[in-house]
Image (cartoon, rainbow, N blue to C red):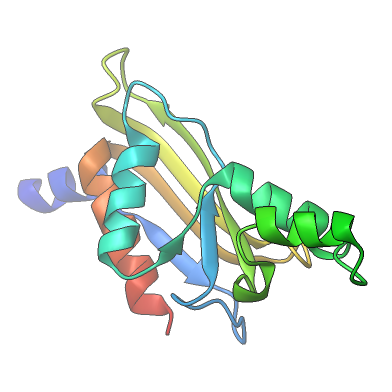
Length: 154
């Protein structure tokens, strides 16, 4: 009974994907968060890349969405945009992974809370949400999150 109590106090990542959402590993995903001393963004990028997700930088995704509808006609200015914007035609769906988290202490070793949302940048729709409360290492929470996300989608 004591062991069960201790395990449950550690917390678990809970993840939900919106029914009918078309989010898949082939979609383009960007992590919309700056790196910090915990290494969250770098570690999560690596884990998602290992799971087969198509990742691009946040600045590239922002530019792709911004200029997506501006590429019209065949004048030289539009051709320049087309050359600079990471093959817009290949970025059919662009999703941002928004993160929010807090640490148990200043060492940034353990999360006290972690939440994530995947947002379709074309529609603004939330297609996935995850939440964690408890005490677990940054790496264990991120590994669990990446695994659950990969398991939930196509």
